[in-house]
Length: 245
Image 1 (cartoon, one colour):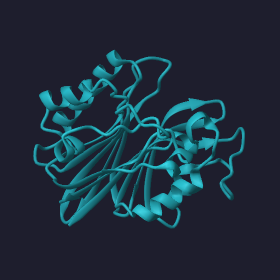
Image 2 (tube, one colour):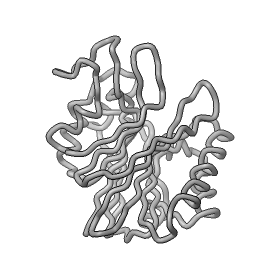
Image 3 (cartoon, helix red, strand yellow):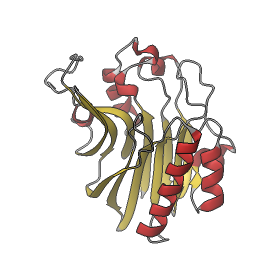
């Protein structure tokens, strides 16, 4: 009855400064961790301009590339559209995904953001998955997290198991404070380690930007991956949580 969750802002497959293209390394890492569900932020759904090193993927669809042979079920929500294509959030799953919604939570014309919502059935329980990437400006993040909180209250039964994960850009920890005060959600690292992980930048992590929140699940473990290899994958470090449903 375990549910293994990984959340990772992959920075479109590039390390810090866009100096190294590490998408194949990310795929190797996903295979090693073998999570049941993977939340990805800043993943490329299509890029028809400068071709990246993705054999047999002419559109540079990173979701399909990462899911191939590892995850039979995947969903993608495009947030940022440009002349070459788009990027956004994705969820990869070993369990069948049932309902899918991608909500636009953008607050200005410069940052296109979304909340990707999916459900799956795990041991006869409906588990709700929410993947997001919030704005850089604090006032926009406050509006976005308030919208998310209201959405969860209106759309979900109070007993539904849920996971809300992603890049919250929460370096001042205002999002965490708001969530703790205004909802029943708990943050995995605060529960296990009584502190939040420093996940950015990957080569010298000093800012706490990424989060995994949960409710109506039993938390067993919370882990942040770190080391030199991750600086070749992204500018963020991945987070992991183990739950019992």
